[in-house]
Length: 232
Image (cartoon, one colour):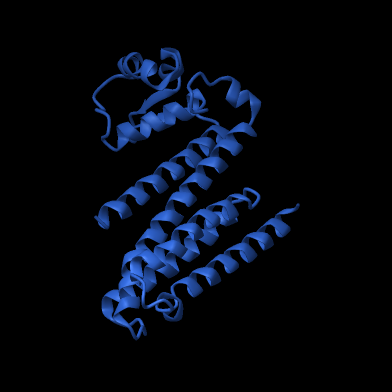
């Protein structure tokens, strides 16, 4: 299946899922069994939907547009929550407003977790398919070559995460066992630019691409944790 077909399948799948959610959260659906406790009735439909949605999304061939589709859906859901807070939601019944307020954040959390899993799968796949020479020089468990590791350490130094008053030799002795490489891997690739007063790591373009993908995955997980903390 070529990329155009995969993207088309992804769009169609998410269009169907979003239609299903719209129907699930519609006032007619929420209030259709008024004689039952509203939360229990809604969860009896909502929880199975989440399980089915996860299987459906995972069945899509792995591709980066899935992340785009999830982001677009998340943006729409967060906008809906903003409308709930301002009262500009168009819902006629308090019970429906309550269900939206309680379960839309759960849907958002579900989608954010699925997105992270997909990002990690994409990263692992790209690492597996990367330049064999780059992979073969690596001794750590995350698939980063020494140049990429040194570039990461350089930025941690430049941004003050690691003390920058230590020499590369000292850093190499301390950090090598932690990150899973040899002291030479760091010492030979980490240098201090006295003109610009910053550390740099000697890395190839493929090594830097590998590092950038990992950092995007880490950033996505931190953002997900940030959103979760904001809802507590």
